[in-house]
Amino acid sequence: MIKYIFHGLVLPERASVFIKKGNCSYPDNNIEINLECSFSKVVAECSSVNNIELLTLKNYVEMATRNIVDSIGYTTACGYDVEIESAYNLETKELTIFGVHENIFNEAKINDDTSKGIPHPDIAISLIDLAKLCGRNIELQIALSDFREAIRQPNSTSFHCYRAIEALKHTFGSDEQTQWEGLRESLQIDRNDIRLVQESARPLRHGKPAPQTWDDRKRHMLITWQIIKKYIELIQA
Image (cartoon, rainbow, N blue to C red; front, side, top):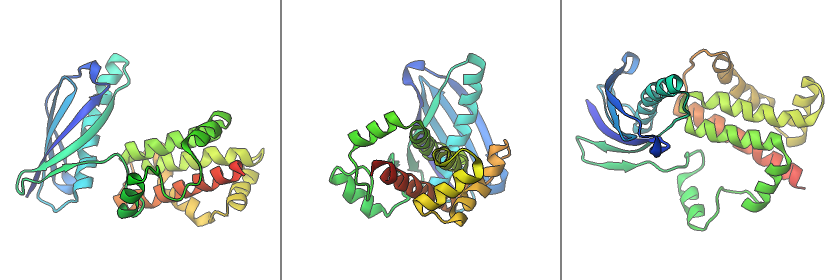
């Protein structure tokens, strides 16, 4: 059995959210989670008899915490967020601090770029210029906002990726068929890449739960990132 202690926060911290000890079970993966929260500090014990990757366990802990926090937010009409920061392996005594980036690129590449002050690989635009573009382009604003949520909400990644792509296609014509054709042709996007994201997003768009594995999330985020990048290059020219 693997067992971790996760630590996190309910944001904003000034809200001082309290959660008494709660238990969440996910029988499909034999995952048990016990969590509590005091002064917006989350502590969760997560165990499983299966050999599950740490990042996947993190997603389950985040989902369990969000379920409770969203319930509190609904009853009090407050908008809370959840951040899981670290995990401690009770067997190996290893502490893992989670970064803020998703490893959709080669991790060594990200670390090298970060040390040089480069926010993302292969984007030839400054943050100031990108912010100016966003200020003039509401569709790009929506796309970047949804890409953020694709990272922050693991169980809805495909939904937010597809919504980001949809936002950009509205700038390529007046009717839907023309818009999709314009997006694909102008940005040189493979129809199958968009369809791949769309098929996983469809059930989520209609309120139906759907599996979001790390491999699928990584692929969909990378497709979406590349589409946004090509769009930025197009409107920047």
